[in-house]
Image (cartoon, rainbow, N blue to C red):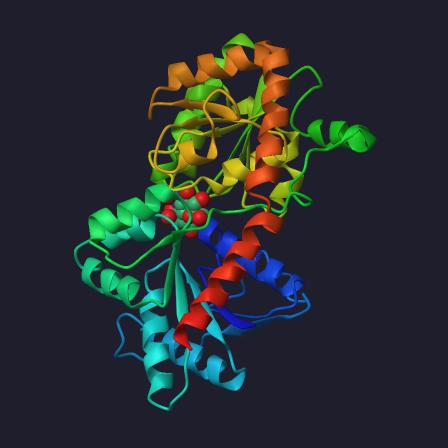
Length: 383
Ligand code: GMT
């Protein structure tokens, strides 16, 4: 198949999923065309079967807000026409599904077909879509999509309930490449110690967090949980990513007097090399439709201390592949982390089960064929 993919190319889970999906589909022999305003950050630009088309957005003095969604629609139609695309797959409803709808209509006028699939990821529904200025058009584009998928049952049900969507939505969960996201095994343990030494002594635990540091991630809770843990056992905190709440978290680390144990790494490309260094992953979000970073950690044998919100309980089996708590209950999260780290048998079992679950249920090899079947079914239905 020839597939056009549109996503937000910057740091963020929906862009990661879209890019990894394109890479996996290309490896299966499909031709993938990314259409976006800049190259998705996990693409090397040299992958076989993958093409990137940058959307030119003209900015005339008259435009206070350059109309990216219109430029995107034009470019989608143009790429679909030149490269004979079979379908478009857009990630994050706003504005991508609206642009895809316009592109489909533009081509229909010339007798060409361009069905599109919308994948819902999270705040496109839970925050942005509920803003009344966006709700009617988001709902319309979802209803008009040829196919709609959601990354968790939670988000599917929320979309149906809050948007009064009447068309079917299929849940296809997020996935991880378990060969790329993997624990550092015995053969390279020495190497692991070398890298670990950047952050921690051999008798210290490493707690890790990875996100785009938006308020929904509650990064200050990460620092608070770590401060309580570090009172009781030698530990270091590694924070990967950047965003609006970083300076608040840095200030808090100084205020609590733990800044010398907290490492702010900023945005990192190869997070698969960092995650296996951790003992525990912290995800105290106010809301999370899935929690991709926790899945990536699980694949590296790193269990999460997370919140019982949104789609997280679908991913993390409380007490089995991680521990779940109420939002903001930093004392309970710290106590849970301490209990787990002090019980090596329970901890090791949880580490093994986390990896086994990632491989068994969320491995790219298992999930990507679900998308392929979904595309095929959609293309058959339209004929
Ligand atoms: O909705 C967002 O916050 C943005 C989005 C993104 O682009 O990072 O994140 C969502 O999609 C991820 C990938 O499917 C999920 O793992 C995240 O849980 C989800 N974020 C939220 O629901 C807050």
